[in-house]
Length: 362
Image (cartoon, rainbow, N blue to C red; front, side, top):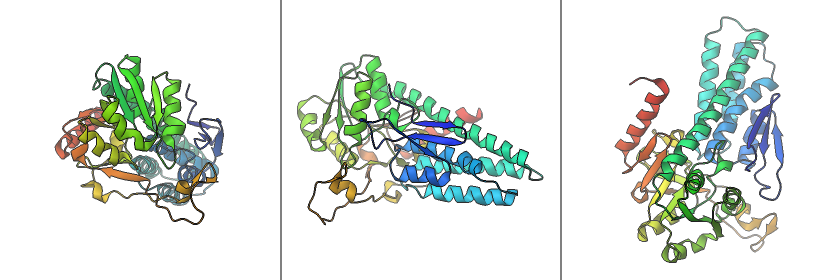
């Protein structure tokens, strides 16, 4: 059983501390936007959809912790909260999507008010609470849809490989890429799953393989540099990954090491599937060259669990993500359908389907 990732109660947000998994289940409590942003930046939680959900909850948290005396002051609080939350991590689009959506919800509410009062301020707080809950529920529903659609792409007795963590721990639902694997396993379509350890932060070793164990999926952990050998010798017939941001043409940013797996999959003629909800698609970016790649601390490379594993004083690089060119992607699975072939036109068509579904209009 995967524990709850986020618990909002009594004006506080309890966040499952994923830095301590799988050995210890502990929650960190945050009370405002700054605390939420720090938890995101410090990797207390991670995974693009979950980051987005936490970002949304940061807004009612912020208003609950403050006592403004005017709508003007309230708007300043909200603008500050949005800046702080957006600055937490630059690559995952879901964070920006949720922050913008919450800010727009608040601005619309305030614009409809003639005067400020404590009662109306509480009404705004409740409206933001409902919107954050809605974003959370949309993520759960999207995960379920992607799981079903992605499982439909796999043959019986599939041997699959995944990278980083795109399971329940990265979302508020069953997950994206790992959600496909667990759903396919319930349909008895998975013979075996391999999880890359995902250096340097070891999300695959600490989180994904634990999730697969919890879901009783036949699985094994491998080091990142074993992937090519297993593609060649173990009959891997699908690589399934998540995404943090997808450009309008389909170029996809995901955890560092994803690009290498896509190159290997192409050489071995293995389908390479990206599973991500529509808020991951950034239509303002023409190609992946425009995606900002987060550079994280070199200590995450040179230390493991607080222990130095490299020469003292050594220089180390840590780009947190890389970009896989669309030419290497077999299909993108969103909650609205399977995009294949992956190109600008089919991505736009998928996004229009999402809009129509939400509005009921064409």
